[in-house]
Structures are given as C-alpha cells and as structure tokens.
Image (cartoon, rainbow, N blue to C red):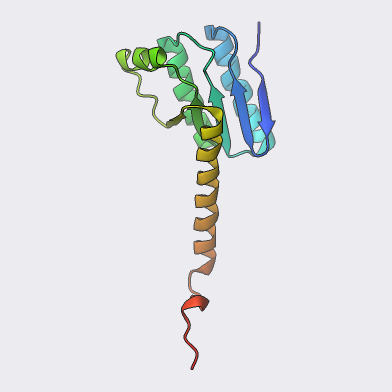
Length: 141
C-alpha cells in the first residue's frame, strides 16, 4: 500500500497528496499525520490536494476527520490547491468540511498559519500582562 509522505517544514507539517486517495491510503494518512503532530509538537498542517482531480465523499469526510483530530492535538489544518471541480463536488455532496480552512496555494496556506501563530503569541503576551499596569500608558510628571 502506498503512503502519503508527511514533511516537516519549520513548524508546519506539509502533506502533498500526489496519488489516488483510495480509502486505505486516506485512513493511513489520518493515522500517520496524528502521530507526526504529536511527535513534532507542530501547530500547523497544510494538506495540498492540487493533484487530486476527484474527491469522493469518503475522502472528504476523512479530510474533515483529519482536521478535527489535528485541532484536538492543537494543530490547525489548511487545505490548499483545491480545484474548482473538487469544490463543486464537495458542495454537491453536502460536505462543508468543518474546521478546515482553505487557501489557494501552499504559500497562502503558510501565511495563514503564520497569522495564527502571531495571534497565539499576542494572546499569550496579553495573558502575561494581566494585573500589571500598561507601562506605555503611564504618564510621569
């Protein structure tokens, strides 16, 4: 059985699906990706489906499950490279893909995840500052 490679680039896992997504391959990807998220403590996953001409209902649901599992493991999923025909098929099948953000290409997906990282860092800084006066707002006479 073929496997979809999961590559670590910086603090992001990149999955580029270049083979037909048969049911067993999709299930194996789900397991491999969950293991890799835990092993690398990454917070972002990009799944590139630009090579897929067709996404059936099983693969669509598997992508949604991968996003849900990733979110539970504190990683956000972005699907990139979706062709118009695939998007139309997913909508016609009634698959809304909850929890999955989309971007047109890998570069935009990385930027989207980078924005999330900055937001998390800013939230952490705000939490650390609670209870302390904002030094920039202190007026000295």
